[in-house]
Length: 411
Ligand code: C6P
Image 1 (cartoon, protein in one colour):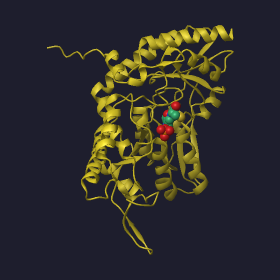
Image 2 (image 1 turned 60 degrees about the vertical axis):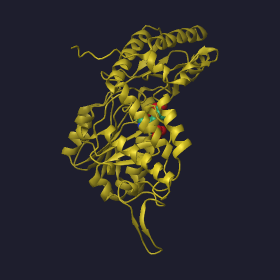
Image 3 (image 1 turned 30 degrees about the vertical axis):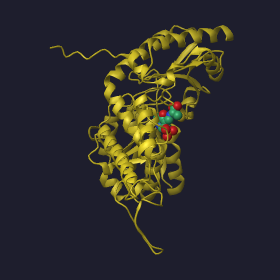
Image 4 (image 1 turned 90 degrees about the vertical axis):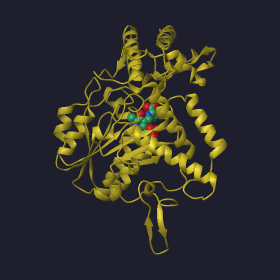
């Protein structure tokens, strides 16, 4: 019996995404901006619609049937997320608005109360602003110091210098699993191991990793892992912060309000159990339902099969774009996820993005919320094409053709 996996059927996958069937500016849409936000398959759209149409009410509050149905759907989504990450317990799964909120939660509920002058937080030179600014705020609040491990011209972390910057003063290491601006996949297992051997805790920003890699937080050994649903073909406004139970247990809540309390009096309030202690107010219930459906969808396709498909597209696009005179690829790490950043001489990335859009090709242009990366490469911005499970070789050739048009315009 053959054990060979079925070939990845991208034509069938595309049929799951109704948004892709449209024309933009008179051309079939070529969506190459999944790193900014993935599109949603029918399975997600229908799960959200089903919930909103038949089951919606507030959660954890009512004895009536709808409230119980909504609670079941919401807590079922938490169990789905636990399985997705292979976390030990549902108590380790905190629903947040997205990666940004997850990182801010750790900054304010873990770092702020624990750190002070002399303590250090170590990040890298390729972080998204969401993994820089919350730590800068903590430094202002506590007097601790932010250190930044450098990257090299390929966009890879200089691991030796990173290891050299890890000391007994390092209390927290916060790094991207995958860089959004460059596509670099970081050696997170090595980072976690080295940080722990110095006694530091580790937060991984998984925003760009989750659509391309199966995540096992127990195997990774990280203390926190944050990601957003909308990068994973799920809804916006929902994400997950995984935190090790012992740590979450010790951390104070960071926002107060309904649902995060056990008792309230004017003298003193006591707090709810995990994970609800960190979920003040009415949560994004339909978002969680949609996120669970997105996890089912992606795992149904097979994350490894999706990643292999995207790697083929990345290799093709890298080869094709490398042939274009004046085009420079920014980010040439040996291990990359499905992101291709580039500049074209004589053409500002924003103008390039506008010309490509007029051809129906959607890419992102700008600093990608990673200004220090742009500063490092001494450029104001890049154009960034990113691939998802629904992209095709034809999409890559459409990008190449549109870049040809741009070169005609800008000489
Ligand atoms: N990057 C991009 O186009 P939110 O906005 O909270 O869902 O995710 C923030 C975030 C954090 N870390 C990384 C590595 C990210 O890529 C992002 C979001 C998008 O690259 C929008 S700026």
